[in-house]
Length: 158
Image (cartoon, rainbow, N blue to C red; front, side, top):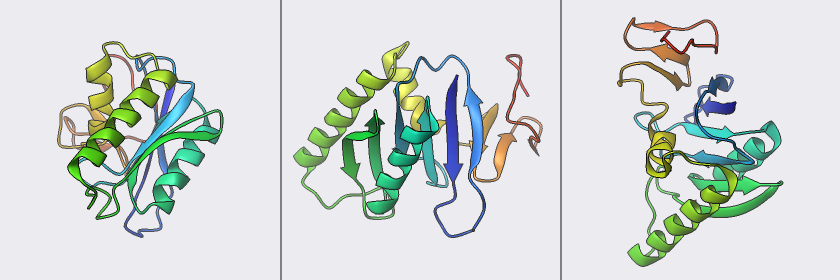
């Protein structure tokens, strides 16, 4: 089961929120990102807490980025120091960095299908979409307008 954590990156002092994602492939590492629509909080995905913590700390140290970790080591990172979303680096450098992120991701998770799962990492906390999504407030069920008490959501919905 894939773990997801969301941390408010704007100083609210709130504790990280955690959820479990089914059908997200087998993870042997972690991915962390501040490109997490709409709030752009820190979102971390992974198979174990140690790699997730290392990925989260890499993102925090860089004031925002994408980071991939496996076996306690950072495999790839793409700094996004302007609001955790933008870089002043040259376009080709950013493209190379994103290619390295994608390549590293393919070594830590079995995607099925590849593009959709990677895209989902950027939208899993997008609470304006239908269905349950993890925010810094907890799991938000937008269809019913509630924040769920439990991180367990059945296959049939909230």
